[in-house]
Length: 102
Image (cartoon, rainbow, N blue to C red; front, side, top):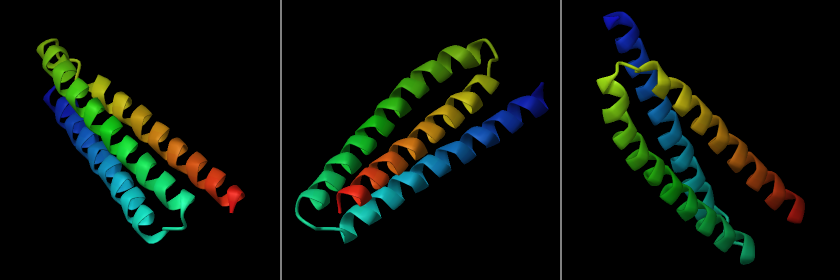
């Protein structure tokens, strides 16, 4: 039980780090592409992504207290895998849409 719990926490930390890296990469790309409308669109989408990420963090913290009381640690690994894949899909879709407009 302890080993599973530790593994789940490490996987959850890895997913947190990947999500932060994804947000950092989005922020950096928005700084280097200031071509009028598309530049402002990227800034808006980056701010929305950060708002979305912090909203998930607050929700995750409150859920974590409840689920850890019942020893459901592995739930958070799947939750972060889902949110990470959703974030990657969202960024890829936005980049593809912006590339097709240029």
